[in-house]
Image 1 (cartoon, rainbow, N blue to C red):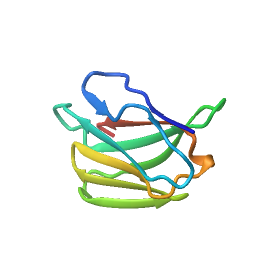
Image 2 (image 1 turned 90 degrees about the horizontal axis):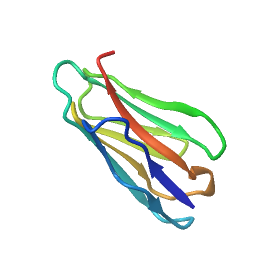
Image 3 (image 1 turned 45 degrees about the vertical axis):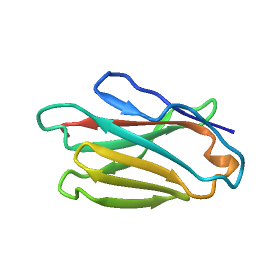
Image 4 (image 1 turned 45 degrees about the horizontal axis):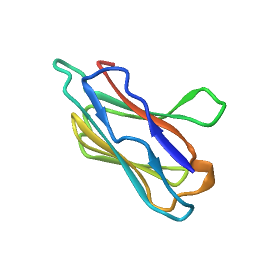
Length: 104
């Protein structure tokens, strides 16, 4: 099983690829150094052979937010820092994950 990260700018830092077994736990971290009003944080997932899909959009006025979707926990710790956690990895979690920051 493979979990990967994709980064399209040097201003967003993300955990490198992870290789896991079913039942393992995993955390991927995201941090950005973007200046200005980059308050919105997004996490995307790309399943094998599929296109990217948005799994969560975390709003700027909720700085510490926890979302749980399809056994994926997503925490936004601060305006510039977040984490995606898989407490019990399933085969269906095999994907590329990436985070993004935006002004909207």
